Image: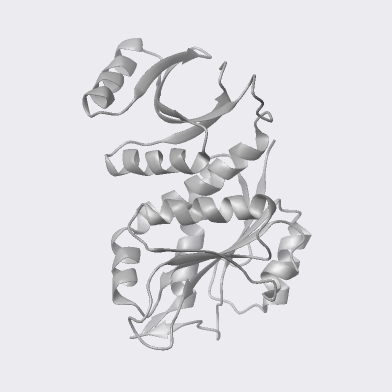
Length: 263
């Protein structure tokens, strides 16, 4: 199934969002929203944006754009703030209520960012937020660290590419989870992290042996005319996301594959 995702960069224009030492939340939100959207597009997701420039929209306008797009998911990017500088730290995801696909996606995003060093505050139900209440599709609002906490800003800046990739991977992993066959005792679904696909078996084996030498549970799979190098077989998607982040930090390009055990 082809998915469409509406990406929302929170605030914009005259609405700066949180501010700290000249830093404006609206700019961080837009930069990260565009980066995640680009990765999703490269992986076959139909992506639309509430904004791609520095313009102001009311929350109701953002929700309306999402509804008019016919998107399957609405993902809003924000950064948190506290009454005093350096008072709090961590990532948090907000949802209308703690149920369904939106909760799965929120938990996966939290876990992926936690692997990068953010403290995981958790998933919080915020039914009063317009972009969560007025959207007709599952919606998640990501608070990517506190804008007025130096530690979170340093992590946001130094690992920006990894943050974008981790969020995108968590989204893609959740979408994969929705499209695979419903697992059963006879046919459970496992998540495997793919690090490469090669026409030449020798090239695949070189990567396989390299991964195994580093202690990764890697294996080789021949399918559709290519040799696929994959790592692990996880029943829990969040564990696969954690492995994916570990492999990315080790320098590998990855993709989460979901398939029945008999695959």
